[in-house]
Image 1 (cartoon, helix red, strand yellow):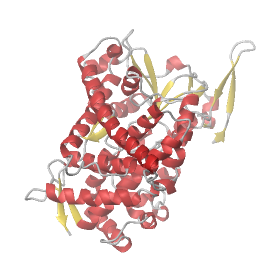
Image 2: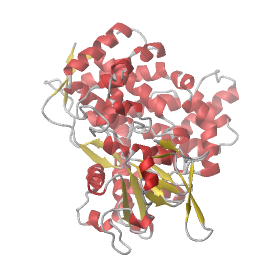
Image 3: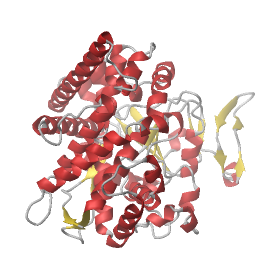
Image 4: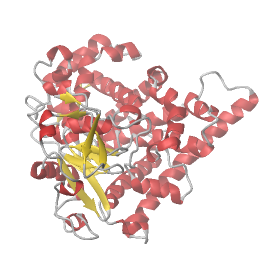
Length: 509
């Protein structure tokens, strides 16, 4: 293996074209590098591209993650896909992922995960938000929020708050169980916990999503689900909705309007309350630290403050919620590992005392279990970039300005990278137990929260929420699947969710 920063190809007299690459096998240097037009993929039709495959049901949008697996199996490590005039290059090999991400530069260019949400915010003259901007505008927002959202000490400040919500979550689980000790609406219950936990971080007050305001919280959960489901369908359809009011686009706008208006109301109330406390001299140091920090940043407009707060408040409904459910499933399905995690928790965390950061740091097996769940059941299908340089991806020239989706999740169950890839083995992530499990040594394969400066800004909040809630649940309950032989399936809704209701028995310890 040789490392190269730059390759110069000679084409014609005096014509030099530069392609940047971070990792190249020596084999590639001896092979003829192919043109962009040679990248394999499904048959493309004029104007339609591959869109007809989705329209006719050859590719199912709800099964998009398996579509990607099939594309990889059929066409190899680099695949081209076109939806109308939009071209996407899928890269599956982790060395190509490394190549693309290492060419990011100071300000990586990222196509929006939800183009529909970006369009909505533009139409409503809202701030596009951190995830929908690039270049200097993105850098401005990122720099403004990085102290509050990305530094561990700032996130750890909220641990006592999220712990109180986690304990309320356990109480709500208990009250929701039927005679067989099973909860029939676990997805909605987990989503309401996520909403309440995000609310206490953003606003430092309880919103009642787990009790008095359950109906409101349920409507917010439903609106968020519609946003992600409809957004996923519109992403893979011809962009007719950009020009005429289609039924799906109308429903999408209604869901966005509902969620944004209600979230904005809560944010407005908090901003006004903070202002009143400041005027009366009653605002204490460290109180309402998330919003007061954002409001103190001169580079942030009030629009920016609203959309950043809304993003942290609502994003967990589509990210933390499915990830948490996948964790409950894996733990319930593997009672031997569940027992080991329980004993680890029992030794470290008092059942009637507070959870501290030091305690969470010692929960090595629990953290390894969460990471292993991310491998078996990722909640996203790609990391996306717009290339800023001409690149060699695989053995193909890919010009600057190309949309590249890095789909390394397809390889999470590959025997090339994992021993026993279909088995749930958290110990593979405990350093002394890795052995020959070579996946753990490749830094550009297991990166569920993204990479570099465009890593998910809410990562530390999400992980803290999951570790805390899982700890509180396992302290009180032994988890059992009502049908131990039923395998978890996923459905694509912009992100990946459990396809069927998750039915677990919560048995008192």
